[in-house]
Length: 349
Image 1 (cartoon, rainbow, N blue to C red):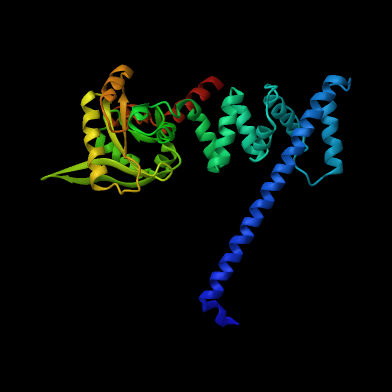
Image 2: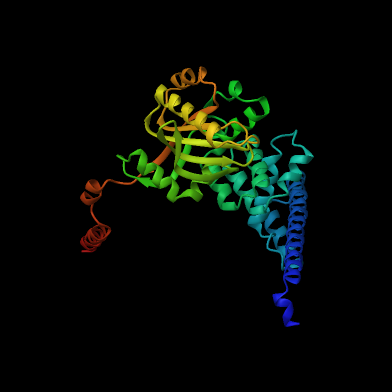
């Protein structure tokens, strides 16, 4: 039957079977996770009730752990530490007496490790619920989830200054507003304090995976310094994206200094040019995003108030590496270690 290896129909059918089995495996794992966390929720509730109503003392969880591990030796979730975490997890969510069955079901739809990260890093039910919902929506890994929490996405999303309410239809306006944030955190970049716009643009495109993660779901990278010919002149957009959920082009312009009103005018020109030269009839209106180092909120709002094309203004934050002159002036790791060794030797004498 070796001829089947070259048979395209057989290979297509085999590929379909593999995909179906992988989907079956995923559903089985998801169902198992949901069932296990459903039991954890019940166990957390029971532990809290027994600790309130009984006189079993401080050794209760230790004994419960020993008994459950003895009965179910292959289960890793019955250590004393995990029983404490189950109790903590239950109590975190039960802070809100109005917690819904739907939210409890959502909590049980994400892995246990994700749940523990959320309750350990979030300060409120509202914030924790936000990360639960977005983990489910976007399929975040645990590392991505931690990054989003530590970069304070909950408080940054939808905070850009925009004119979307006036420039877009209501539904598109709401979706576009939630797609932007303020500030953007570029902590994956290392630039000297005297970097320029070209260096910032180059660094962002060299780290495009991290950049897209920070921009958020839906952004597809189209290119940098994208040429637009208007009349007899050539113009170049810093960065161009297409948003797959908003179904529109998104222009990103970078400014390494403070926001100035004329920046909005230039971005408005670019939006008009993209709408005329690149936008297709089925595309929604092009959106502009101006990223600057600093902005005066009132100046930004004034600048956008008379502009008809949709745009937003946000700040960005990044970390700086030490300039060469300062780095050369600092002692090396080797010299520090030699100094410490010498100091320890002197004290021993």
